[in-house]
Length: 372
Image (cartoon, rainbow, N blue to C red):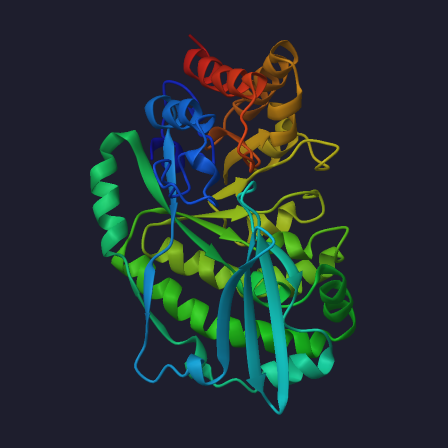
């Protein structure tokens, strides 16, 4: 919290992002739970005992009075050939649309095999959905209890997508980029439809759970090479900035999450008034150096990240140590609001190699001793 407020700290914070962030249960024997692998125990323990925890949580929701989602959407889950599938069917505007996802026992991710919207006609039919389909009441009680239980070991971070994320994920990536470029008026209508309920829920959660860190994901959908910077202003600044302002109105800290290339949009992210930014990937995954972001925008934003998960999994401990030292030096260069050493992601499989474990330990050791 001192880092978020721009107050002096005795060392940079160190956080493992999803590890210690996601709500996982290593004792759950479900074959689709990768975290019950013995490989994960030491890494989960390291995160719990020696890192600055940032629990990634969302408010629980219940359908609001009048919610009619069940009249339009149906979902079925089934297992086939060792994988777990989820199929969603939407019937609206005289059309039937489906999406399909698959989860394997060996990876902690859901693969989208089919997206709900395939073309312009699907998008127009989707816009016929009544607003009541998206009406939910959030409840922050569980987050408040967990926050109290954490004490000084860490904080709760409210995790939410933005209107762009909600709209873009309705399409495959290829269809989305074409649609967002060529059907801008229609895409704005999709964004407006999602913005209506997102602003309302953000207001309710921020008011009931004030003063906390938030992560807003989705802006990367409008960064290069997917869309030109002019559309980042149209699709992100226009629709995500109001969320930032609501969060800050209640004393919270809005952190913008955006992988990949940032150089062309950093000024616009700052313009939105973001209090934080992650994961600030170094080249070649990104296109900016951490030290340049720190010097240009570090007074306004707490910077999170700069460690690639690919480096954690692939570099030798000696080479990885050089990467961490560089990030710590650049992230704390000169005067700035604050820096949190953090990976861009985490392993998604069952196996954690000795090299990977050693590199996570290096992050903790160097951050803990930095400046000492």
